[in-house]
Length: 247
Image (cartoon, rainbow, N blue to C red; front, side, top):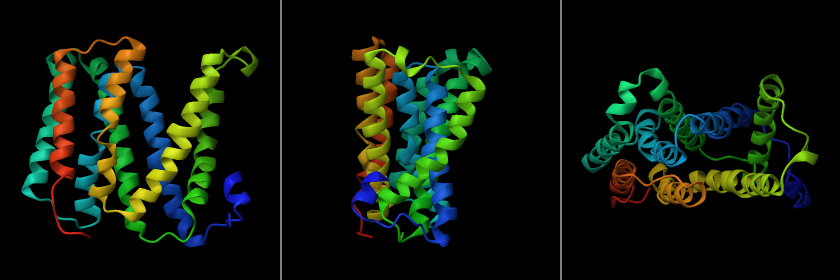
């Protein structure tokens, strides 16, 4: 918002855009990030990343439903491959452990669906009059309110003066790059491209997530996780790399 002010961009959003701004912000920012945070508390980060970034497949289905975009045979094959990856990742052990073992995957699946729905709604809105930086800024302002309320009700964090340097570094990186910049660029991509073209940019994310969890958190790369990662990436590649007519 400060950057928009410095660039003299109008911060006032037209009245007709507010419902779309609120809805898309709720699903792509609040819903996705909140579900991701709680989901990672209940399962390994590497597996959580694979489930969360099955999003392109869900976006394709929602685009078919809400935007009337036709799904080809190749895309149906990709969806089936993606579901196979989820089944491999969950496995008999997760199913046998009952609701407790399925809680994390279910929450992460909700995160993927929330992101997909928000993405499709951004596209369904069509042309936005406000600048992407302004839209993103207001979305974060609105989504911050329930997050602050929940934080005050559920948690008692230590004062910032007691935080470690690594906490400041991780928080700063997350807020500046993973949240603010990434969300603004995502909004711009969805506006300029088709759903399929925009979501292809998420192809590399599960790989980064799994690799980071292994290198930084010491999580093991089991055969199950590796196979699920390959199936998920194959599913997204099959769906999104299909050659077709330009929009």
